[in-house]
Amino acid sequence: MKKLTKKLKTYSAYSTALRYFQESCHKLNVQDVERTDLLKFAAFLRDEKEQSPRSVYNKFETVMAFLKAQGVRGLVRKNDWPRYVEEEPEIYDKDDLDRFFAACDEEERLWYEFFLMTGMREQEVMYVYWTDLNLAHAAARVTHKPDRGWTPKAYKEREIPIPEKLVRQLKAWKAKSDRTCGLVFPTSGCNPKMNFLDDLKAVAERAGLDAQHFWLHKFRATFATWHLWAGVDLRTVQNWMGHTDMESTLRYLKPNRSQEVKAKVNHTFA
Image (tube, rainbow, N blue to C red):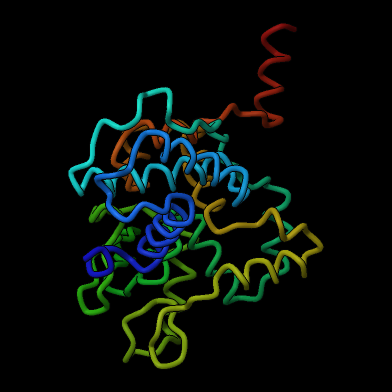
């Protein structure tokens, strides 16, 4: 049933967690699972599978959700749950972005400026249609795609304003696009582009940058943080990001360490 209701990536994560639990706990009936089995599972993930603290927590949470769905509850205490330190989201340095975009060709620049200027997730960009873009009103929407069996995260559709710079690029791109394909960034056969990350790292290497520090989600984090620094209110950024709670958005409210801020500090105590 999970395979029918979850995206492939999510289903794969669930399957891995449950497979690891089977490796750790050899009991055949879920009703026989005890607190000690779950504590051993957390240790197994950490020591045998060498999972990061965040991954240990996620897999532990998946198994707990599975047991709950089977009617097995109350096995662990609050302090039994694995812990991890919530890392501050990384954002791109403006100088690195300038070097990165200077190494892009026209098509690559459009791909990654779209990521940066919309804050969309990877699959949201993969499945963006021309009908999702209102170029006259400078807006992009994230919508359900029943024809491709794809839905936004948490089934949450939303609209995001886009800058005029991106509007101009999209208009030029549309003028030479395949009118028979509704995808904005298709590959052959009107299929979604699946290798944005590989191409991102290739451009970073071409620019003489450390490709290990270039990730698609980092564009999303940069989008959120820059807007918050610019004074856009949290509720609005939450809506643009498609977050279901304010706490998720607050993670991107990073301290501003720019030269402009340093200048203000110096001016204050001049």
